[in-house]
Amino acid sequence: MITDKFQRWSRLIGVLFLAGTAFSQSAQPAKKQPAMPAKTAQPQPKITIEPKAVEVLKATSDKLAAAHALSFTAIELFESLSRQGAPLGYTTKYEVTLQRPDKLRVLMPADGPASDFYYDGKSMMAYAPAGNLLAIAEAPATIDATLEKANHLAAIYFPFDDLIVANPYSDMELGLKHAYYVGQSQVVGRTTTDIVAYVDSGVFIQMWVGVEDKLPRLVRAIFLDDPERLRYELAFSDWKLDETVPADTFTPSIIATARRIAFANPNAEPAPGVKPLAKRKSTKTQQGNETKK
View 1 (tube, rainbow, N blue to C red):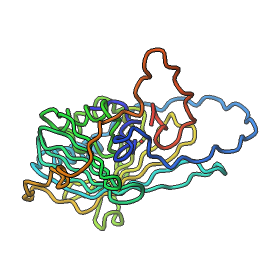
View 2: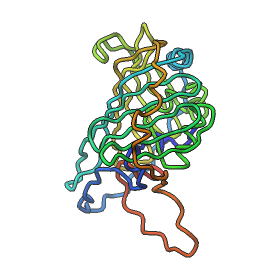
View 3: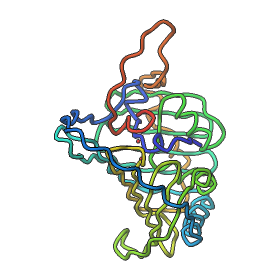
């Protein structure tokens, strides 16, 4: 799967990947602050991976991977610096339905132009309702491979893709550096949750997981290489596992009437001989290795 954790938290979708234009609420640059004295480098903490934390993470992975079909709603809250230098919060809503191994639908109905992503086992489709625009491309035989292709072809990322791949823990384990058990909460998700914290490929993540059902309720992330330490949150609700999914869920009803356009990658390399534009200062969609969920 996508190994760059910064890309995992990007929110390029909809009009962005259809028209190749990054959809981000870019903030004005912060005022330059006086130089601060250099800080003495702090010793790196010893890598610790607690069995209890791994137990929670594996249980969540097993629960999600075992579901033949699942759906959920995710609300993303991410920060971007304001012109005063303090972070502003922006939100995105995702309505997700999948059927393993080769069906996925992601609807983004609010905050920013609405957009939809469909994968039916043969094709992946991106639809922008405002312009009635539809892009279609051949797709691989699995959700995992299709997410990879969507990333490569059109810079499409979802902040929850680590949780919908075939084996979430196996994907996570490659970059796992720290993991520990924090405790329990009776507040998040209106249920009792286990709280774990871990570092995965340079991202510090805190996750609340239902004690009984092993399903994620809240994820918070901070990129350790980000000097601003901006925060990203993803709240999950409306989990449904192994319910019957109508056959037409993964194909847009407007496929015959929408105006066709090609997928486009806003991060594509310039043509030979073309001088690339200067890169802008990082925002939400550019925070880590371009563009991040």
